[in-house]
Image (cartoon, rainbow, N blue to C red; front, side):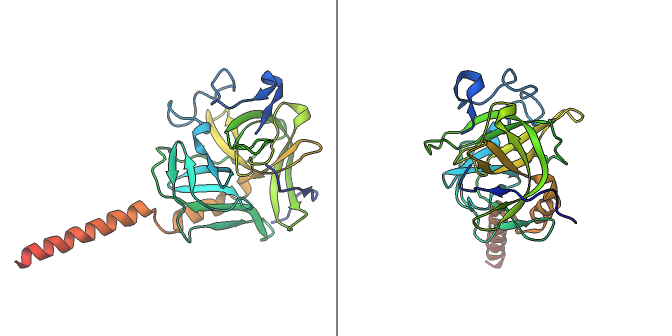
Length: 265
């Protein structure tokens, strides 16, 4: 598969979404349907939203994909996370780095966690269009606090293979320009979510993961997950079972041993 567009130099030291057009401050409470159109539905349950899927990881952000898997920016790294109020432990040896269309490493990883987040699996968007509205959620803050916040913006850049000039990591991205709306990424938002609403399926979908921004132009870059969807699905389907499955298997084996002992008496 060919790479796309121009190569953009990014500063991946980045990534609170500043919602300065809302109340000249940072939106740190979960959005509602009156804040974001259609936000109150399309999540698989009326009691949850995309806000619940974004977790705190290594002082930055991550997103729960479902079935015990988490995705984040590669430069954030794997580790223990807190998602939907649940402290979860990273499973050793479960981390996978995703690959770009040119087979180079992308700035994206997925890994398994223990702990029941009480969240169903997210649906990944098949693509992103220029002009689409994206709801961004992350744990960043200009003062490097770790308080989750949200904001909206409009997609102005699409299908670009962007490269971090410091370490050469490139990632297929889409981007938003602060001048078109109200939110941009800052340090700590790396690994956070970009959600779009599919008006045909009436469903919210995970379109991107924040990986970088330009502090001068306030453009925010998100890894476009449609290009990595097959890899993500394959890894989640073929890798080791969730720890809870191993626990159940061990418990079942223990019961068999006890039963065998009882029969031999």
